[in-house]
Image (cartoon, rainbow, N blue to C red):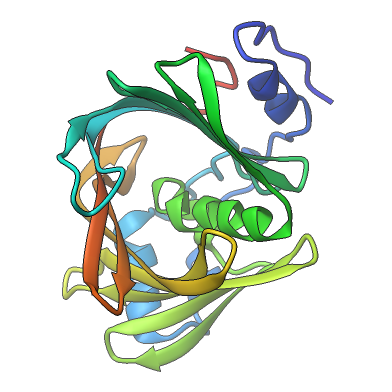
Amino acid sequence: MLFFNCSSNPLVEELFNNAGNISQKKYSKEQIKNLSRPVQKYFNYALSEGQPYVSYLRLRHGGRFKTARDKDWVDIKGKQYFIAEKPGFVWSGKTKMFRAEDAYVNDHGHLKIYLFSIIRIINQQGRKTDQGELLRWLGESVWLPTNLLPSKNKHWTPIDSTSARLTYTGNDHEVYYDIIFNKQGQIVEMQTERYKGEDSKETWIGRVSEYVEVNDMHVPSRISGIWRLESGDYQYADFKVEKFEYDVPEPF
């Protein structure tokens, strides 16, 4: 077990203390030989033979956020911490009006929002929140390509010549993304069903772009979050990653 000084956020300390270092594992093209052609093309693009597995990631991002379809965009700054051996992340973001924390730690998720960074107005938790946060961890693993490789918990299923389904089974959940690839082999879109509030599942779409090379891997630096509703698409997030730092299990 790891013990890090993360006193600025006890949840980050808890995240890292329950993680493990898997950098001794190396990627081999043998691992993808039975996958469908678009998935193989993605891993050939994103990774190089012998690439060490990513254990941890921390990042900073800027961007824009909308609290409702009829509201204006507001600027947002955020930071996020990931672990790969088991599902887990902690994200915090801040605008002029609110501060938010999204997390999946020790098999449980939560979303907390504070008005003016002080008054808590949302505190979501429970099984539906767990499912949503587990989906976030899986989808944002585009920033940790080794975390998308097939394993006992992750399986790729062919769909057609440009897409495939990625399924994660574990933690008493089964979640998935239908993933679309472009001709270059980049992931460009991820689609799934997740809870919007407490009532029903809706179609959620993540679009990623502006790939960069970091630590000999190709990862997207831009991500947009979109709800596909009966009333039409509602884009609420447009984030641009400003810094990636791999295998630094410490807070910024």
